[in-house]
Image 1 (cartoon, rainbow, N blue to C red):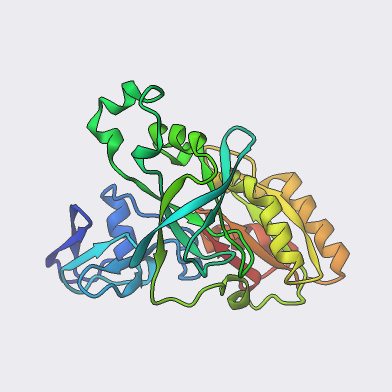
Image 2: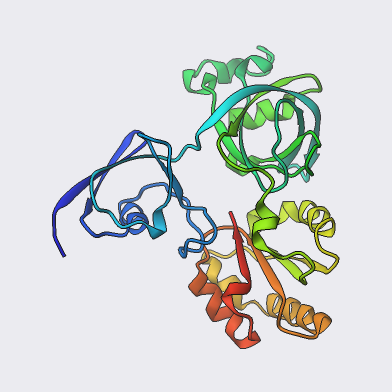
Length: 296
């Protein structure tokens, strides 16, 4: 292999790569903060964008062939949305229903920011003394609403900077948030592109995505009459250990029994588990990886 050193610019950071390297592996080996999931090009979690032309690439499927200038941020347009409701979910998440110029629906990706000006000076006097806390931070969210309904998203405490979590809690009806919407992409395609209509389906979530169970339930019951249930993986230091959990195996065996065949479709909502990890777990059940769908 040619040992030519190349430069990878990712937002405001620089990394080195060797000609012929796998882009994702090279970035991760140098500590880059890049999301990933299946590492097989199926889930889209590792998607990055060419900073010069906004074209998307899957970093797990990209071979480094030249210097690259990349960004994590989806090409988008920002708009102000009005808060219709703010509902606390188990004290660790909030559900926001937002009114604005959006045609996004279940599974689409949007980015939400909580403006500093929404908060009272008294509540955040200490926080406001730090200039960092006045910056607008956009958080990636999955749209949870059906097509044609107001945009609905969930913000999770562990994914927000603490000042933004306080701002989210303080949002009231008629408050404003900024939302970046992806441009140049077809919307509402997540379930359609899985090609699971009328198929028996289960959803398995990583521990941090267990909060989305009811949203998957509603979306899939509208899409397929044979939604068989949801299972949340147990938290482990190594998430792969959760795939060997007896409760998960029992859940899948029950689903297979209910369908009378091995044609079940599995949606994994999470990250950090590869197609290879799943293949090892599903092989004893005679479930193939082409029956597995990744959602980050």
